[in-house]
Length: 294
Image 1 (tube, rainbow, N blue to C red):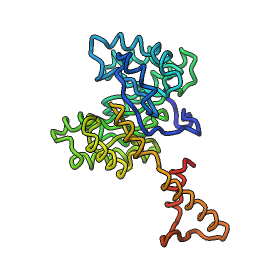
Image 2 (tube, rainbow, N blue to C red):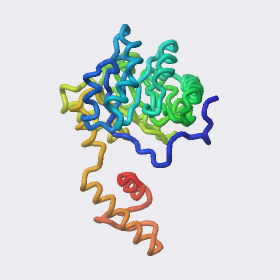
Image 3 (cartoon, one colour):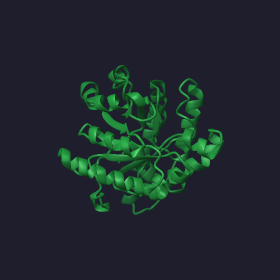
């Protein structure tokens, strides 16, 4: 049976990643260097990045390569969309070393329910704790966007929603640009936040690995919109994601001053206080706590 709301699999101290680097699962030379790239998560891709004739090989070698090269790395795996391939993927790659799967082309909540149930059966068969394998749903279609809020609430295994902007733009018949994607991205962020899970993405395309200035602009727009992490396809992108999504020292210093002021205000029986000529109340304090990971 799928997990119930009171069976949430995430530990209390679960740390949300910021940078997620895609690596084709059939490229051993790429996997061998992946842990050196500075990404919070390595996302091994069994889907679009792997030619059809190599999918079986990539599936078989995934766990041995993880054990050889990624023993200390947080690993997610992007599985295939068709059920026949998806079930083969799950049966092979569900493992203690794989903390989550990325489900592409998530069009409705029912798909998440079925995958949740399959994961439970496989975890039981492999002697893993029920709920060990988390899910990131990927919205890539019009139906998926319409159903995003329902998808976000579909399972306690869900830790994030991502957006495949290229496929989404294709189904919409529109250009993949920040101006056309702003509204859909905002809808996805709202859906994820409503379920208290992580919105992952940028307002643009992660395929922009040559034009890093453009990629940075798209990341910054995503950060402003509420995304809290981004996928990368090139190590140079990882550097930018880490710069934008990990707080710098001035922001950390500001957050610490906010919490110090808040403590003094509480001791004085006050619900607000002033800092640098601005009123500070609870929402600002909550933002400071989030920056400091409290």
